[in-house]
Image (cartoon, rainbow, N blue to C red; front, side, top):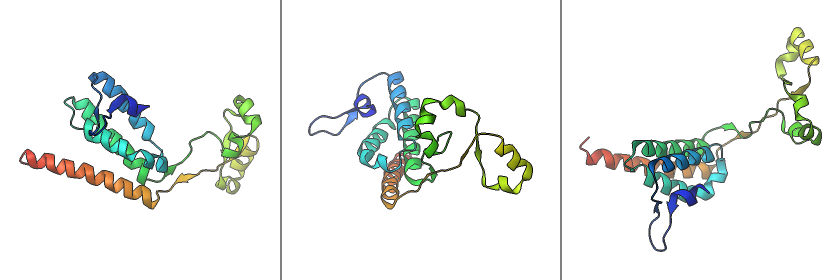
Length: 171
């Protein structure tokens, strides 16, 4: 969706940014940054689009567009090579997927997750026993070798461009 609003692909030609207003570019680049956040290996299939988008938008005349190109790059690198929670839900996946939770989720508002150290604290254990609780169960994104290679390629391309830009201005 974001690609169709930002990139223009012509047969036999390199992709280009679709001519549009600065506000429109800012809007779609902001969505692109949010869209790549936390995607992990799912982003690998779209690396050509991310690379083209960053390459084209970073040289735009509007500073805000260039800044957002850097933000898309940052979010992409983070998604590919950092360790982060794969799912951010208010309850454990088993409870979250259960039909009773899905149909009566409001009954679980304010429920506290059971923690491993509550057993060590008698007052904490008693307080937790009096509340509806769900066990903490978190899945983490661990970068694969393929994700790290994609991130390295993206970073090297960005650094090569930055080095060229600095060299051309005499820095």
